Length: 107
Image 1 (cartoon, rainbow, N blue to C red):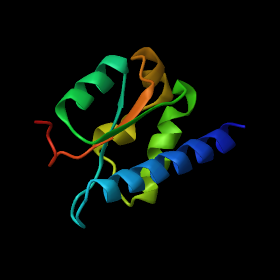
Image 2 (image 1 turned 60 degrees about the vertical axis):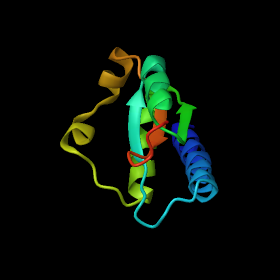
Image 3 (image 1 turned 120 degrees about the vertical axis):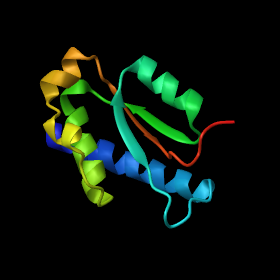
């Protein structure tokens, strides 16, 4: 069940990312940054960047979806990202995966 959920969430999220990139004219060197955040973290990112793609994901599969997305986009993992564990996600109340582009600050 969890693997099916991870796959479904990952596919839907990648679909949304590709659509947003086309819609907003991303160039070849534009890339998405990803953050696993709480609701307040999501709000903060959405206030500072446009476009953003935010999706609420069950904490128990959030890390797997995050890893799947980054792997499928051939993005490398930072040291902090490699050390994250499901326990950290639950303790910090992280339940959103947010994608944004650092080159596109809001207003």
